[in-house]
Length: 68
Figure 1 (cartoon, one colour):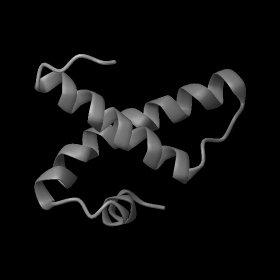
Figure 2 (cartoon, rainbow, N blue to C red):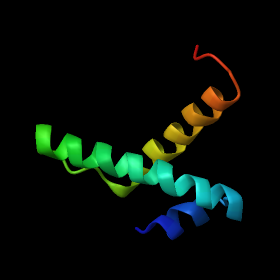
Figure 3 (tube, helix red, strand yellow):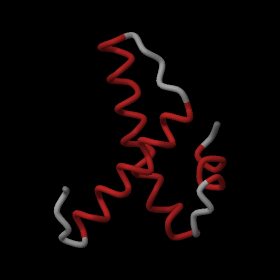
């Protein structure tokens, strides 16, 4: 699954899609790290999960919200 498909799944606006590219790139780094350390292949569904949650953390940080 490509980034555009992931963005469509979550019905992201154009502005959010541009921002989520960086979050997806971060998730890709996590995928590579997990594979190199554990030999585990991160599935695309898991990449979506990572991307969404990385985006959420960034938004919270930008808004000054604290994690629970």
